[in-house]
Length: 582
Image 1: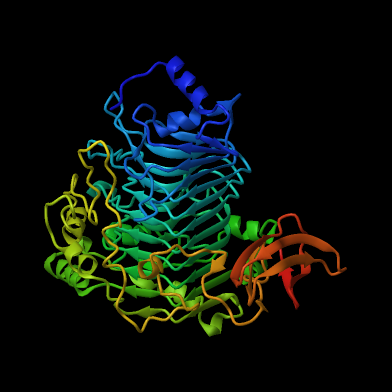
Image 2: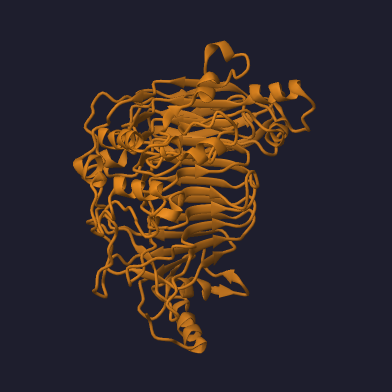
């Protein structure tokens, strides 16, 4: 723990740091070094004038020691907190929860309170393990969104040992983009095997709705619940190219999604704890029957969500049918697998227990209710539901994933082992057992950093060459093959022609994605027009390098109707139609 400093000294030093011409401040950017005298929250909190941040960008450059966090960083304005990876190793700057004078540990790293603001977290390692090798097991959170209409970008970050939620929100109509990030561990005790989650809607079922959730090119390893718990309506949900590995529950509690793309993911030994008889009968993580534990579970809309989708109150079966017909859910080319070590454990557990009530109800890819919504005989009810290419096959991960992680043990690296952890939970006797995949252990030196590259790097590159995706990238998180981040807006290969694709989804409300490819570097104009030929929005107007791009278009301010989007790049011109249906 650091020595105490008076507020006066802190303010004086901060004032010196902000004098124009000093190396810290450059064109709206404050370069921040890990400092033994001041925590990262103190530096950002004191970089204010009349409550307004003096800088819009905080650049963290130290990769030889951690930035200690002693209090939640509250951000009420648009701001970027950007780490600069080590030029040789790629090590990310690390923000680490500190031990306070009273022995407590900060619970939340960032709270976002500025309605309508944009916050970007880029290339950061957020570590919940404090210098005394403990963490805040009751309130550990990476990011909490507490105001409406916030846009959060998380790119190339690591969330390690967040014991409650990695990212949570208690507000409406946010846009959340999570890309190229790794979420590690957090299954701390047997009594809390259902937390944390990557993304969680707080304060009750159906309380908060979102505009957009995009979760792409990420890995979740040893995270208890898995990816997403968001039970309000979400206008657009894209969960693609992610690895979800060794999770105890989940992975989704989003069965009433209305517009979703769920493609090219790997689910490996997920939902390991299964369900007890009580959970199975009571629908622990499914709102509507049949309550069978599933990776993907979809249900019909309730009246609140149907009304939000229609834009008016529901007045009988015809309105429910109209709302269901507007839903679009795509589930393609996902890989799912439960290893023989886990399935044998389940079978033996069921066989050796004398009553049904001790049995483990084991998961499936999709339960019968969900499957039926994709059948051709029900296409008139759910015309927008498409499922294809999903396979139950072993991706071929390395041994520390496929077998070592299951092995019982008492070491700090793996806790009690995944199978022993499940047994502790299901016996109802576990109170201190934990499971971690190679838990981060804090070093004793002043200049300490977490292990890099991540210890799972060697074994998350799968060996099964038969796996096929919808877009040519490796199934799951491509990082384990390229060790480079994958941009949501730019795909790395160079196309052989110019093209403009049909927007997805279409019809849409209110956001959609527009894909286009450039054979050569060009000045690009991409604009949207109404049926009268009047330009209503500029999507792109800039010089762009050759490549394939994905642009998000938000039509919140436009009325329902037919629109046209037109691209002009060099000599290439193309126009396509799209339908906004509010």
